[in-house]
Image 1 (cartoon, rainbow, N blue to C red):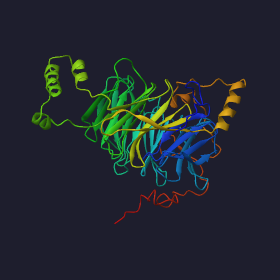
Image 2: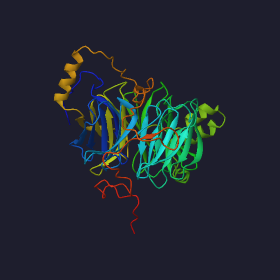
Image 3: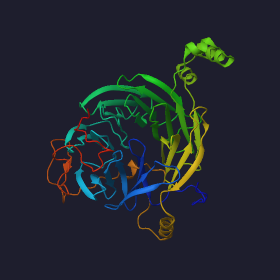
Image 4: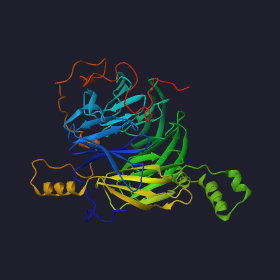
Length: 443
């Protein structure tokens, strides 16, 4: 474990802009002032930087497709343009420009989804053809959306309202709406699918209650209470690979882990205990109480927690199995990556086992010297979201490489450097063991 504390107090690392895990939590992508970095997170004792991209600075969106060579990048310098790279070859596969700033990108082995404030674009990842544009979607200033990593269903979830917590679930394979879910009274703040796309978790802007729904039916399965004392901003939700656990991180110092387990009534009746008897009494009494009070009595609390040494900083968390043990991974805007052990049986307080730097010490010294210099441009507030940093007055899209206009929605396809590797068939990314071509079916 790294023992030296780089900072006296929690501060945003000046080189850090954004971070995201890939679809199976084996890789961490970090957007920086100079470009982006891809890390392997398959070991506890080391954090290997497997690639550093410097094609464009100030990267605020970087998404890697599983363990393949495909990476999607969006820069603050050109917030309307999405660049798709083959990072092992060092080539650009293609680029697209859109009618407004890009707020988020999601992808699986079948679809690539680009979310703007009031529209969503769905591409076929084999050839990057634009399949569908969802225009006039409810105002979504944070670019909130979730795409199932299971390409057999490719469910897409996004806000169905800008005033209440309604979720639209859309089938991105068949290009049709599946269901609408009335999830929360307040607007949505976080969404995530489990690995199979059969469960969807959501949180509202209040951040006190997290709900899990069955997909495609949209029925409520679980309800968890994160807290009662204060409203918080949920920054990430993530299921474990087996969908038995769900973690939630926020702008507070606590990460919560919830256990998705159905309580068996038959087992309780066989061996009743005093606590179960009291629980039944409360359940019976709740039928006579106001709905809000009754709901609180049926909400489960966190199974395990992590206390971070920071407050108010942007961070993302995920659950992963590393070296055969369950771990909680936290990437923070303080420039560090934290690994905690999780007790899957008893829960409780998770133990920090490793702390890695996302930036080496020499870079931090450079950043410190830059801080001492007067700046012409004022920095973004530390608590501002990634999407908010680009939700600025619209800038005209670069037109030097644009060759045509798409069939609808205003997406413009740039020229391909080199010749489009997606043009004739499935994605070819040189690592087919990690990313089998979609077009081939194994017998």
